[in-house]
Amino acid sequence: MVMNVGAVRTSLSADQFAQRLREIGMFFEGSDSVHQTMRRVADRLDAAGISYAIVGGMAVNAHHHERTTKDVDFLLSAAGFAAFRQLMSGEFSTVPGRPRRFVDAANGVTFDILVTGQYPGSGQPGPISFPDPATVGQTVGDLRVVDLPTLVQLKLAAGRYQDFADVVNLIRANALDESFQQRLAPSVHADFIECLEEMRREDEYEARQDQNFRDAQGESGDH
Image (spheres, helix red, strand yellow):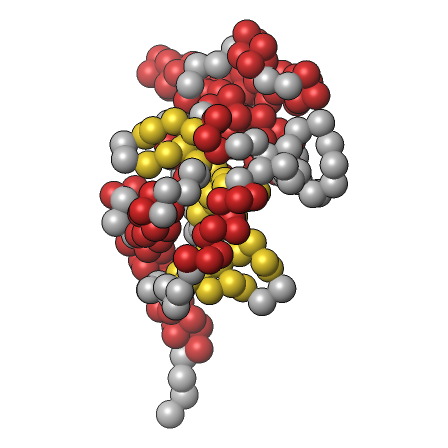
């Protein structure tokens, strides 16, 4: 019997793609494992009286830009982090070699703890450090989420490709302009303006594409 390897690979790829589409749908419904872990950890923090704020990709979603993410980030004070480690049981475990990364035993989803006073990006001292969650959190639904200026500032300070992409999309989703930089640290003003200009370049590109399509449709209609 000769196996059609190409057909098997295509079938597996199609199955994986279909599964990913189901996962994406569940994510935007808020019923996926990442949301479950986020709520489970937040519930434990609330029950213990530990102040927290959700940051990272889940905070981006809370501030009106929808995208998926495979993990959750929580901002805690140093005292809050110490208290969290004390209340941990078999429900959460640390990832070997990553003292601030934990695994939810219920589903395998990981979550990171960012600690007040430490630094985003390389972790080296810089002009922007992680703030106290008690001073930058806001309530979204029944969860505490970092406020928009702090989210944008931390992402600009982190400086990764995804962080800049998130800022571009947050600018668009929240109709931000040059005046918003007044709510940010001076050290990230130039990067914020660059993200704002990138958003405008993308919008101009889309407008040109639409106009080119309309022009082409008009030309074809004349024949």
